[in-house]
Image (cartoon, rainbow, N blue to C red):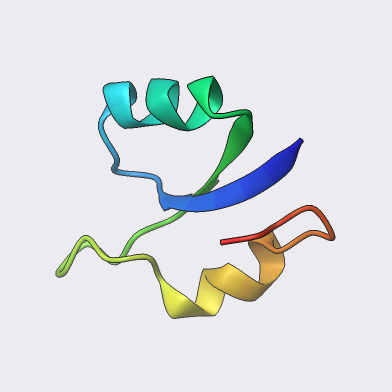
Length: 52
């Protein structure tokens, strides 16, 4: 099963859809001021199964 990087502030239904398509959400912390994925945390979240 491949991993899909998603912001940790994502809504629960999005995680359900990701799982329905055979992927596993990989949550990454967000920056509080923008709610975007924190670039400094991305590299630590990447695994050999990460695809997006």
